[in-house]
Image (cartoon, rainbow, N blue to C red; front, side):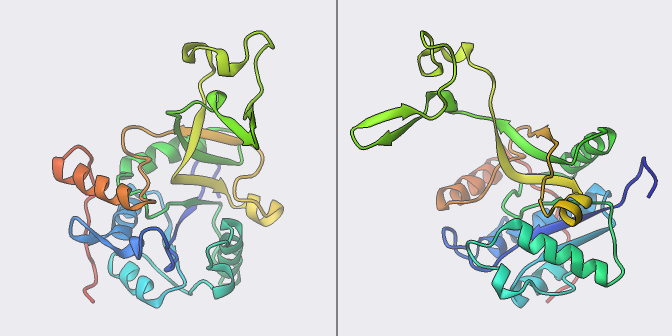
Amino acid sequence: MSKGNPSIIAFIPARAGSKRVQGKNIRPLAGHPLIAYTICAAKQSGIFADILVSTDSEEYAEIARQYGAEVPFLRPAEIAGDLALDIEWLDFTLHKLKEMGRGYDCFSILRPTSPFRLPSTIQRAWNAFKAEEGVDSLRAVEKVKEHPGKMWVIRGKRMMPLLPFGPKEQPWHSTPYQGLPEVYSQNASLEMAWSRVVFNGRTIAGEVVMPFVSEGYEGFDVNHPYDWDLAERLVASGEAQLPKVEKIHHG
């Protein structure tokens, strides 16, 4: 590895068992399966040595291959359920690749539910990540719409602030929004990390995480039926831009 140009692989996780939006990863959006936009954005970014889809479905695997991703093996059923953690399939995949003689300095997780993440988004994140010394990972975030300082936990007939910060005479829940610190929420569009965080610490992020602030619809996540309806409206109106898609193998 050269310090200025580490190798990186893209992982696109795509389980077949989505509950809230059935089959969302391969559901057509503007004429192509949802996953196609993430595969093509990754390809067009030009930063990845390889682009691999992690799935438990041979059907999903075949669709992924049609758009230029590789699926050298399927994810085992025991790490493909609703409650499976990212670190489980990530650890499995990196070790499996290592057994095959394939090693990468870094990895990126690009979830197929973020169709408006463009090649330029990925390039921007990668340039920031590899230029920053002393960090373990990068994660996409966006400014929260509802500040957690105004949130409460209800216990029976009483409630308490979720974040009991601020002086007693002026707690966050009684402070104007303008007086509260800016808070960011992670979104599902993009993560990058050094592979050592998995091999040495079995985490996906390590301890030192740098922010990547999403712009516009880059962090948009299709997670509920109304998200899908909104995505279709954004595409139809031209308000949001999809990556250019090219199918390289016809099934």
